[in-house]
Picture 1 (tube, helix red, strand yellow):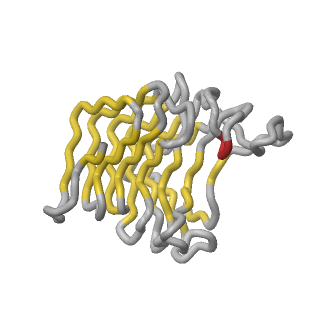
Picture 2: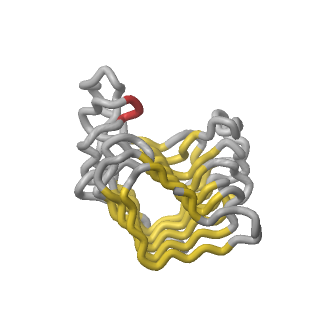
Length: 193
């Protein structure tokens, strides 16, 4: 699937001063090998590497925080797919918000030429969320988490060739089981906390 703009669920009738966001985003492919969502090369809005934009964006229903944040990001699920940000230096793959019932399972994120983030979990009221069987190749940082709220559980995570750090966490409770990092930059940290 070739796309040219950000994918995000929007409420038909906005019910918040914080925008027309909505939860219940459920995207399931057949497998990471056969289902690829690719951002077209040099897509408009994805060229500013100082302010990367997410290709796929999930949010909460009834947002009370800016950017679709809140504690009702129910049923946001991404499964069995590959997301390729293409030749877009200002693209991050996923800006994910999930609460209670949702997660990311069997997903590949490709960003060899991107200076963005593979998986961002930084908006308020994040978690609890499960991320399982994730492969992130490229990007400046593979996974970024923030905000003191619930927790994020990661299992079977593979991070390759990030240019700044594989994982960056600020104030969230995160648990990793099976974290595998491959880097060719000996002077870069794997984990920044």
